[in-house]
Amino acid sequence: MRIFRALFLVSLSCLGSVLCATGLQAAEVKTPAELASGFPGIEEENIQDSPVPGLYQITLGSQVAYVTQDGRYLIKGEVIDLDNNLNLTEARKTEARRGLLTGLDQTQMIVFSPRPPVNPTYAVTIFTDINCRYCRSFHQSIERVNELGIEVRYMMYPVAGPGTASWKKAVDVWCATDRTGAMTAAKSDKEFPVRECDAAQVSQQYDLALKLGLRGTPTILSARGDYLGGYMAPEELLKKLELAATTPPGTY
Image (cartoon, rainbow, N blue to C red):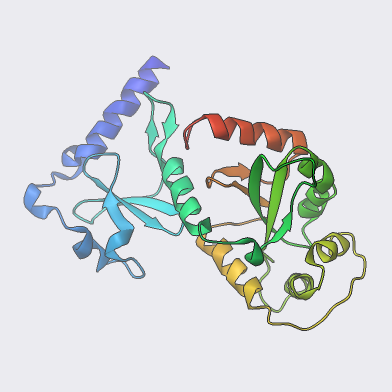
């Protein structure tokens, strides 16, 4: 383990200075603005100094990559701080996810909150697909989740996209007068009153899921932006939230 750690640090040192791999000279260092001009869809503000000297960090949505300061090498991977047991890439992703979730209010979600006398201790945002098997399994325990003091904020993410059966169900639930009741009914294949409405919010939630880089459902995020995982039992979710509340982002 010590040998691996030493070799890993040496490799990072070499990569960080970039001199060992590329012979990069100071005159070849590009500014973020210069680099952004060569990356379609990337703005100057998406490029910042990274934790590793000699590399820039690119953040797009919650996706993170690294590029050498001459713009020649793009690196997709994780940067680990072995001294502090921190995944710095995941910490940056957590920060980016929190930024994307900040500003959303409960009118943009379908919220299942603990009933009095239980007060919410934690809140999670869950991107869900009504046809998703594991989303349905999780929802079967929603009362227990609430009993543990966890507020669930559902966002629609019909993974197959617009024009599909999952998308139609998402729209039907969103347009229902009683959205929480409709969500529960839909995930049990039960009927509920359906009406037409402006369902633009479904598209916005879907687009947000894409910006977050989500690939499957359910995806559970803490209020801080931590990626907690997919389907899990209520007690396991509570343990993960308690751990996240007492450790820095990216701790492993």
